[in-house]
Structure formats: structure tokens, C-alpha cells
Image (cartoon, rainbow, N blue to C red; front, side, top):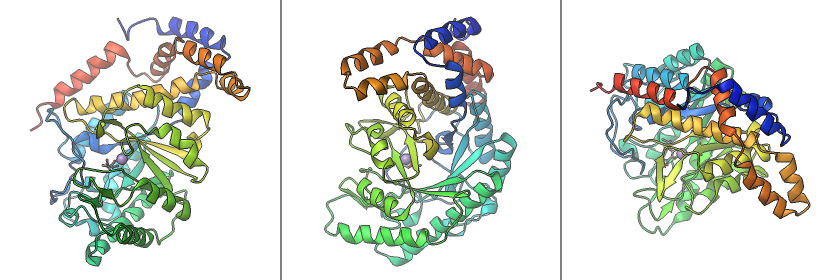
Length: 420
Ligand SMILES: C[C@H](O)[C@H](O)[C@@H](O)C(=O)CO
Ligand SMILES: [Mn+2]
């Protein structure tokens, strides 16, 4: 039965098989164990958050489904995350949105402070996790026009600038407290349903608001600012103010990290291909690993060609030291904890496969234009026993694989499905 096989024996055979290709499996496991994945809190409750008052505007993003077991408060969300992290090998990070504050108070977005998130920091410390952060520029009455930082009304812009400014302070304090820089990622839903006539004015307003928000400087050891582009969203089909070109230019000029979300481009565009291109001009990269199905649908990531290509680029182009890997999907039709576990493990499996490829040999073949040998070896390498190396890594980390994993996921889901 999968998950109960002879892991050690399988691994010994796999180690030999990879050694025949000049690949060191133990080095690959060590490399993988050093890559943290930033796990998005919002998969746990369908992007709801824990504010006591919230607006209706969803910013064009939506979790669909009504599977039982949604976390209803910070304690339930942390319990779900504890469970999920226990099924995932390695040490990771939690990516928190500002609307997931943990307080009996009712601060508006422009009033939030570090103390409203202190319980998350305590929990992260206890569990050896890093934290990342995001201002929440949606689900609020002042975002109901699908305009925030680029709104023509200066009062609304100022409200959101203050929110973003406070989020940077909070993220920097988290980074300081945990001794690991927090990424604070800016995504705004701003755009236009129908064809606008003054795109330039909207983009100038967004740029000026970002500049105001980023005015205060922080140590890079505490805070990494990131900006996230998007092609379009529901309700903003004709123009997104923060398009890819807008933010690529902004990140280059202002020195922020660039966030590439796999769901935010035309379906035939490859984010894997973009990595090396933007890396020549941008120092830090943030990934939102997602799976668009026909649109930015945010499905759970599969171990598919897109993910394998992304991981291979990160490893082969040596981009891992300056890339933060975050996940961004939300599926409410399945167990939310299972969604996390499957998504994170798939990202790790993709990276492991990349570490296990005969990189130097393939690059040498390409450099001497031997595309035939490159093709043959790339295809033959697909038959190597990657699964045995993954199972060994999981065994060393004492996390389950196969049927054993399914059993744990089902048992946890059964335990939480009675939540109201
Ligand atoms: C909740 C996130 O901030 C959001 O998903 C954003 O990153 C995004 O990708 C919007 O489409
Ligand atoms: Mn995203």
C-alpha cells in the first residue's frame, strides 16, 4: 500500500539510480529542506478574515464552495495551520493578511497596529515559523468602487495610504521580532469595468499613492516591500491600473520586490519564463504560486508542467536566494487543510525534482547546441525514481505519504466538520 513501503530500501536504490546520472540525492534533500514556503492564511477561511465589521467588495476574487470546517476565528485557523504544518516537511512561513487581526477591538483599516497581530507573532515564535504580511485593500466600504490607491477622491486614497503605511510598520515589527524579514505585498483591485478614457491619470494616482506609502524606510533585514500586478479581475475587465508593465517599471525604479502571481497573466504566458527576464532588472522576487483554470480561479496547485517549469527555473537560474515563494489559492469545495497540505507539498515536490535533475550536464549540452541529447536526457530523466527520494525526505521529517497522509487528512477534516 502506498505510504507503507520499505522507504529505506527504495531510497538506497533511488540514490544509486541518481548517482548514475551524477546527481547526489542527499544534497538534493538538504537543498529542499532549506527552502521555506510562505503558506497563505486565507485558504483556511475562504478569504473571510476576522474583522468585526467588513464591507462587501470582494475585489474580484472569490472562493467558491461550502465545504464544512471553515476556520471561524484566529484560534481555529491556528489549530488548522498547526495540523497542516505537521503534514509538511521542513520549516516554513505564514502569510497573513491584515484582515486576519486578532483582537476584541474594532479598528478600521487605517487604525490597525502591531498589537492587533501580536498573538500571531507569539504563535510563530512557538512554532519556529516566519511571517509575511499583506495590506487588505478589498472587502471594505471604501473599496466598493474597485478603486483604492488610485481613487480620484483624495480622502479615499489617503485612507488606503494610511492602511498600507501601517501594514509596513506591522510587517517590519514582525520581521524584527522573528529575526527574519517579512515580505509586505501590495495588491490592489483597482481597475475599470469598461474602457477608461484616462488611464494615465489613474496610473499617476497609483504611483503617487505608492510613493507616499513607501516614504518611510526600513532595514531590509526586517521588511521587504513587494508589488503584485494583475491582468484583469471580475468587475475590472477592461483595465487594471496596477498592470504588469506598471509594476515591473515601478519595482525597477523604486527597488521593491516584484510579485508574479501565476494566475495574473494571459493563460498562454509562462511565469517560469518571466523569472530570468525580470531577475536581470529586479533584485527580489515574490511568487504567488497558483493555478488558473481559464481565469484567475486560484485552484490548488498541482504537480503539473507549469509548476515543474517554475521550480526548474528557480533552481537552474539560481534564483532561490532572492525569491520568496508564497502560495495563493483558495478552494472551499474540499477540505481546506488538505488544500494547504497538497499545495505546499506539490511546490516542494517540484523543487525536489529540479534539484534532482542533472543540471550541469543539460546546460553543457545546450551550450554546445546538442538539442537532441538535451531532449533525450530530459525525457529519460522523467523515469527516475523521484518518489523514493520524496518519501525518504518525508520519513526523515516524520510526515506521512500516500494512504497514510490521506488517513490523517480525513481524520482532521472529520474532527472540524462540525464547526457551525
Ligand atoms: C488574497 C490575496 O491578496 C490575493 O489573492 C492577491 O494576491 C491576488 O492574487 C488577487 O488576485
Ligand atoms: Mn496573488
